[in-house]
Image (cartoon, rainbow, N blue to C red; front, side, top):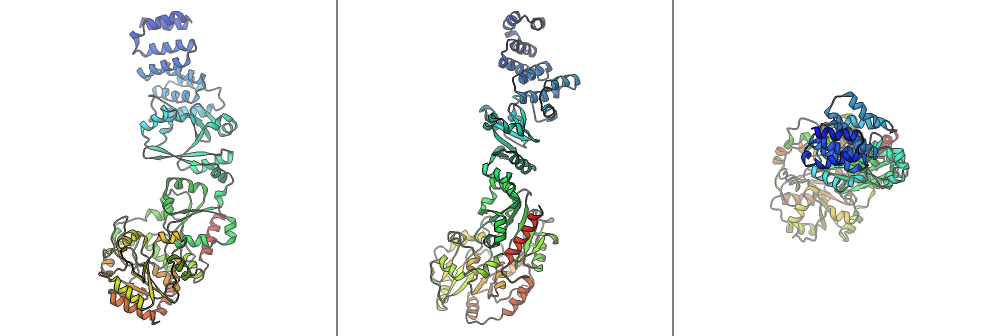
Length: 611
């Protein structure tokens, strides 16, 4: 220890050469002595070998993690070299090891000449009280990692080793944090050298306000850092997006998800947007499952204030937008949500509906049924009608169907077969009998049915539920029948058609428990109900409208012969249920016009006008 004291005295007396000789002579003896490395660092500092000095101080701290002299010397030299971020980070770590107010004041005094001294003090205190931040290999990137839940250490080390973080500028508390310093956003924009930085914003509850704020201030590109599988995913907000935010276009942008060719309420809203709103608002249309991509989950709430879907897809997002549901809500025959017997243990409102701000429905009755399913309070409903019924009234279904099939249908009677799903191909859930073909009657003879159709100058269009479309298509792919034709969402998409643009050409509907029934009530067109498994279906899932025979305005069949018999009656214009359908239409449809899309748009306009 006498040697250590002698070296220290020589340095104090500025006898550099003698101190250097003694340091070299005794190096092997003091390799594991923290005070020795601190003195060697001081000596390197004296001869302006700053990087060597830093290495010595860090070596000293590695040996003795609470040696305050080494911390102070390291912090001072970092500040001297312009590495103010590292100086602040090490200051916070140093204060973890002492409550000495004088030492704390000494550290803080190092930053007193900086215009953002208060920000550095706040950072120092934050690090001091953050148990995730340790002295080992302390760096800017490791500090950023502590702001997230569970970032892989190897991943962070890789960023550090490759100096990736040297080009990162992290937005925090109205300031920009870089590997070297803290600067105001205004100064960051002014300095041309900062063009080399990638501006980063943490994905959290405030990311929308932060991103919009820096866009207004003039930053024209940034990345949102999202934690994903113990790593970071960077979602770029490019110059076009930032210009959109700067101009506050998000206040007049509506994002819609057109999920598939049967998502017909959304389709109608897009197609029949009134001219006055088309000029006033911007539409951001996302197709299919792209809505669930991480990029859209991050971007959509940034660029729009209202989100609209028919399948509640935006309820998978954090709640940052005004969510409108324009789902089925016509005549729903099968139990769903809280009423679904397969999920009878639910004792809470399904989470997805907590995120819905408004549900557009066709009537008070639809509202009551939806509430039974989802416990949605009365004030969340708007009776607008279903936008898809506008399509039923305004489109030429026969011409569109001919386009889809590439087939002349002149003088043909058209039957649609549209059952609900019985085997959900994604979840494997089975409702009722495990039917794996199109018409839900066991042992159905499609050859015989094809002949029946031909004899009656009719064709049957079979459009199964999208939840079992691939399964049914595979089971029926070998059938090559002239009069029984299968239509898929993919085929509709390829011809740029929506399901409801062909539906109004139907003369008869064959269904079971599908809500498509409601649209035929709206059109007052004949329906036949194939309910061969009704007892099992009622027991397993449940029928929402009981008594079933009262609410189903059409004959019920369980055999092929009875089905063909009832079809024949309708084709011969023997319709015993016309009046019943008219009565039910008054119950389930407040409006019978082609203005439902307009009423939804009027509501959207009201919402955005209040923002």
